[in-house]
Length: 543
Image 1: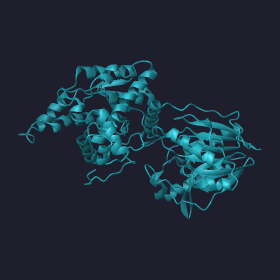
Image 2: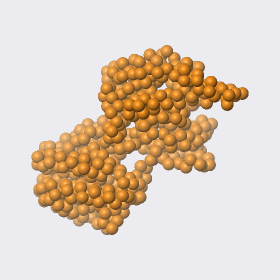
Image 3: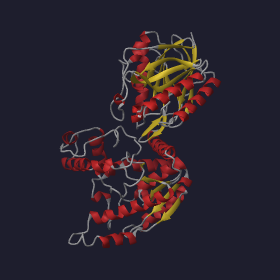
């Protein structure tokens, strides 16, 4: 029976960088040749990067992508290359070209177009459901599929196997969220068992705006057993040797199974990769963070240092009359632990000036939230001023619990270019800090930061739980209302207190306008604010 060596080329591509993406594809192709590969497979839309969104509506973009494919194909030899690209043939298709011997030998067109969560492929692509082409590579009949095609038991794999396919290669751009690798493993194992053929799954890696693609390319034998897996969150070339015996006895020499990244570390790695790629792919060299001495800014600073290195991170401490001495010393200790540059810019003079300027229009009213939020807006102005002066990107520090409930200030702590933890609930913030400390073998995030009650410190003795339910309860209600789309009545039926649920739902609903003006941030949950969840601003649905 035939033997085939496959290389899964798990690359970090940049949307729109057709020449750079093509160069990476060719470099990986040449390495695969040197490794004795018969077939090298690249991720979905690997020429354009994923998702290209409305670039796909530009004819020049599609034409350049097609020309890039031809250029790559002309440089192929014996080794077959499966390359994802947008193909215009009357309609636009999400396609995979099989290239070898200097030309495109054939094309597979994606059949199942996802149109849910962060995906809107039906906006751009047509589906081609009347074809199930096979490609003979190294004497083996190979079926090519693209991402969603493998998620349905009634998809094209069954037709390809009926036509004689002895191997399925599935190319992907599958974004990360917590638990996603296990979901993929279970799905691919089931598909391999149903089809009774091995499946090789190739995934994109890297950050693209809100999305993080985590790689973890893998292969399963015909019995549904995992036989190879690439690294997660890193570029990798995974070599898989398959001897297609009737019992499909694998793995063979050359295959390897990288360990699955632990859950908490996986979320942290996604945040790190998403931050690194957003900063570097957009041409920034340094980032700026307002350090309050609180746990959110501490986590963001730790992630930024792990993503970019301490020389590329600047912390700005902006104490006010309400800042505790402990908060200032905690921020200083964190900065020292991380080895980052700091600036200290007290805001008292500016705050007093604003209060004086507004004394006439505010006369006859009691001091309240408006006066408190002036402090956040002063800090936002300082950070954006430094950003404007030096070209550094401001990283905001709001978490998902705050973004959900509007416990944040427009043009204040929401001012910035990238919101690293906007999809991380408060309790997960604590867990990530604890886990990072364990992996560091020391309290990288100071113990005092983790143990003290959270506070915005905009008024005397302020605590977050003065304005919000305890975070343990708040995060559970947000998970139900936002991520699982449960109604108020359904959550009450699950055992939550109606008063609490109605209060949280009202906060979530009336804060939509704030979230629309928030910077993008890394998606690590099945439903993040942004592409995942698009509610109307003007909305009287009661929840």
